[in-house]
Length: 436
Image 1: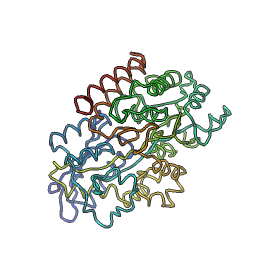
Image 2: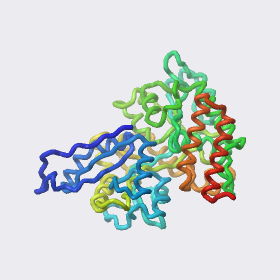
Image 3: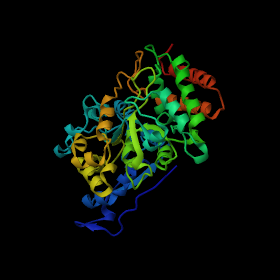
């Protein structure tokens, strides 16, 4: 767990306001690169808003979700701004846990937000959270290694091709691994990737009557493929690696390929941050039997819990941090590959971003092409690509993620892990009233 707090600007006096008089906002966020940049711009916000101070709580993804879910479900009121995602927003909004954002200032330009992202954060047409960045998934690869091996990347790679390439490029003695993938258990960690693989192998979480399908042939094939691929050609300790760990591995040159979030592209193309920036290639997320659900759709967003006693100040902050002006501020101070991607049309129309980010159009197409209402080959009763949009999925997905991780480490077989996951999910769905 990582816990950091931004220090107040001691002794700062602006327009007659002092630090002692300022209203303090407690902001909870995830320790991803874009959020670290946001925290680093604390002084810029506080100078523009001298009556508000920011107190940061920055946590690893799984820990953040646990802390925020517990706090908002109990009305704890620890946080004034929460970083949550496309999964939580509609569920929490329906329960009245979030402050609706229906009176945003005109200069915020709501219509500039990408429609698919905006829809995922709205209830009955009203935004319940503001998108900080949005992403789909894609494949990153080392063009230099592909050229040396005589491998040509097709327009749409397949998972069997990925396995073949990983075998050709794997060199454990040189600490270069054929592929890096998420292995850390969690519904938003290993199961985000695993679910897109299951989708593409023709599987789904539930049939139209909400019967779990986790022990189906499609799940067996997809998870068996995933486990074998990582065990044969992945890095040691893959079951401990989530997004940030794999980002570090790939940027240091330890991975020939990596399938993960499009939001990593800016950091990987930054020569100050990445040792493979000059050799970086990118392609769509691989497919198997179908392209449906092969790449996810996600947005990290800033929301105001209904329990906050500082809603007006919180609104000032989240509109600032998700505005076009904030994007421009990051571009000017941190470089244009570092701006939060995937939320605003104006970002993709900006010549500075287009010049710095060769991946811009590709990422935009991936985000707009992901369809959470049609993500499985056979019909399913739920909305979501890499998750199931029901309240019970947070516990189901995390439990199944632990079982998949146990198969990855060899503690159980894939068949045993999926059978156990099937039984556990059936019990949960019966208790929740979905099944008789």
